[in-house]
Length: 321
Image (cartoon, rainbow, N blue to C red; front, side, top):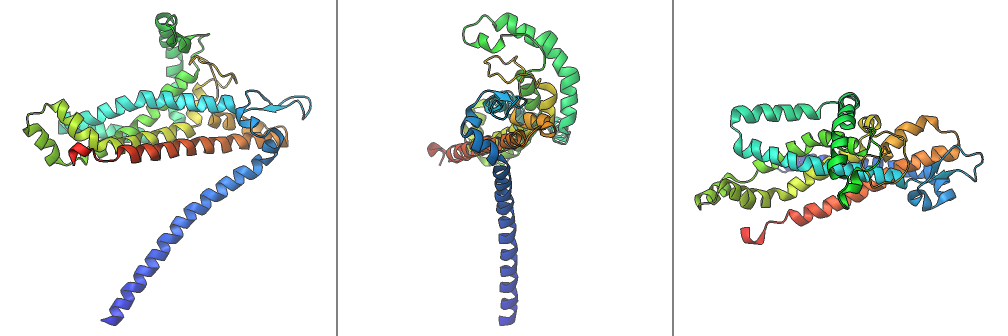
């Protein structure tokens, strides 16, 4: 008996050691990634300091080292704007569809919808980019952007979002493509989270005379909101780091920070993809790697915010305990 216990304890210790090693491998890989990006970013950070992240001018082809300028703020701005557009467009549609599939749709309809959504997750980003370039960009240039500018361009405050020349390739178009790309992620996770709400809880609310909407708003969403916010943040993480699809639809032709969503621009990821093979000096190479470091910082900030939001909204409401 004692021998059997020793064998079991030894197996537990070995298994625990393997799990610890796996977790440390992940930590070491992340630390090495940060170290590598920081190491190659040192020249540009030494040369420009904090102004590398706050500067607005990107001029790598100047005649001398002292006249070159590298400011990543327009790229950071493009990343944040396109990601927020994507999240704002994708979240209501994803949550609404998840509720429909889980609570309203009959099984014969819910299963095909779930299958199609899971299929969308597997589509490569380059395919989304090609569709965006050949279908969405002409549609935005000929239909959507003129409509928005004509009907909303004269409005106070909001009108500033729809000013300027119309190219089709813009931050708005990139945001729409990103919204389509992150929609399946948010939808799939939200559907699974909503499905985990106890059935007795939903039936109890209905038995008390609540309507279908009251059951959803008072019994489902309060308990699923933490998981839904987590799903939103996972979708946002994909939007922040997406590259090829954005490169093909955002324009890649302007470094200015403009309030208009019709302005072509860059994101951090698209700027790295466009310039990495065209660096003409050590400082330019360091600046491009610095954009990767800035992307990691931006993603980390959003990840911290998402953790705080999930912890805040994952609490069970006091009146439901």
